[in-house]
Image 1 (tube, rainbow, N blue to C red):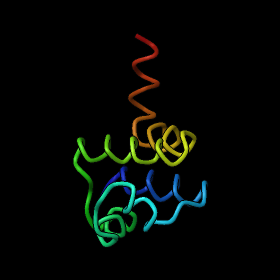
Image 2: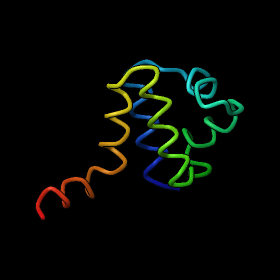
Image 3: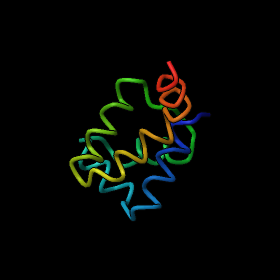
Image 4: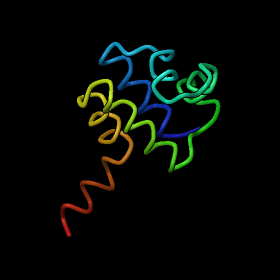
Length: 81
């Protein structure tokens, strides 16, 4: 699977946010976050935006980290143009 799960795992671990806490913030079942976290499935682009919003509601820093890790290459490339 992909980059979103890796970015999510790193952001949650770095900032000590449980998968369950994110699931509650998103309004999804914990197994959904578990599957993203373990790269069994990838969230859609719309869901990735929802993840960033939910993380931001908990603490802006992990939201920024998730976005940076997930879109970092794109963001760096767009800064150059």
